[in-house]
Structure formats: C-alpha cells, structure tokens
Figure 1 (cartoon, one colour):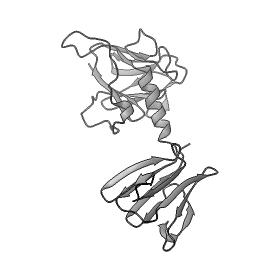
Figure 2: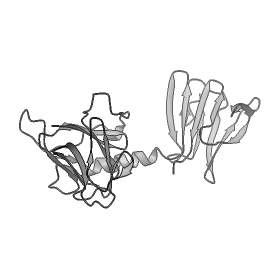
Figure 3: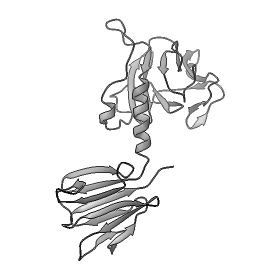
Length: 242
C-alpha cells in the first residue's frame, strides 16, 4: 500500500501510510484525508487500486483535480513520485517525508506544530488525517505574505528578509537606531520605502553612492530582482507576485 505526502504549496504537512485500496480526499469528516479548507470539496478525489494499478479520480469537485498540470476528467494511472493537485493542496504518491523526493520549505515560527491526526492503535501507520484549520489559515497567510514586496539582505555572515507590507519604510545600517541593524553597511544608512506601490531606495550619506543594476546612484526605484550593493551590504528586491 502507498506512502503519501501531503503538501500545502511546497510545505510538507504530513507523510503517512495507508493500508487500504481506496483513499478519499476531501473536506467531509468521513474522508480518509480530511482537509478543512474551502478550496477542497467535501469528497474531492479518490486514490484507489484497481486491476491495472493505482489511479486517481476526481469526484466531481468544484475546483477540479490536477495531474501533470492538467485537470483530469477521467481516472488517471499514477506511479511512484507522481503529484496530484486539488485546491491549494497536493499529494505526492509513493513517497514519504524524508525520502528526498519532496522539496521541504524551511519551517517558520507559525508552523512549528505538526498537523493533528486522529489517534491510531499502537504500531499502526495508517489512519484518517485531519489538517488543523487554524494551521492551514496561518500557512496560507504566510504564503500570501511571501508573494508581497520584500528585500533579502546580506551583511557579513548575517542574512535576513524584510517584508515591506510589514513596514513600508525601513532604515538599514549599523547604528542601533536603525530598523534593521547589520554588521556591515554605510555609516549613514540606507532608506527603503514604498511610494505609490513602488519601492524606492535612498543613499543617505553626504558623499558616495550605492550600486544599483551595475550603476552608481544615490536614489532609485527598484524593479523585481534588482541587486543593490553598498559598503558591505547587499540587498535583493523581490516585487509582488500576482
């Protein structure tokens, strides 16, 4: 019987075994994999073993079931490592967490608790899995946040990320009064701010300049992927993702 890994986006939610030939995925409490999220129908999809092997079938879901990037209209044969998508979630068939086939995102403070599961008898590996609605909400919130404007910064051995949706104007430098204090940066700091939906960077020292898109400047509006280098500080700007 298969090992399955459930993902939300690219974050591993749970890996587990089922010892039954039919697995129902859906929002209904009677499903084998219960996901309490509006993007998943009550009885969304079925993964089952038939005469030819394992197949996946959509069960008339609202958002459809996807296999190899295509919305399926009939049962599809699946094999080791195949990924099946439904709503905001997906299942990797035949691979469990830790086998190296599923990309695992770095954990965040919001996701340090595993998804809740219904109790199973000692030694049993199979069972219905419930995804905690609050955890899903927080993960979706985090995923949406990562699509918003942000800056990746590097200074010495330190690295970090600043989301401009959290603070639209931020001062970066070595001084203790800076919003982001770094070990290496211009003495008179760099200012990042959002103006009419655009990200502007300003070099605040009286003399000198910063390097933006390979050119020296003291002030610039940033585009997606732009790299800013100045005084031991490196900033990479990532724009909103539609």
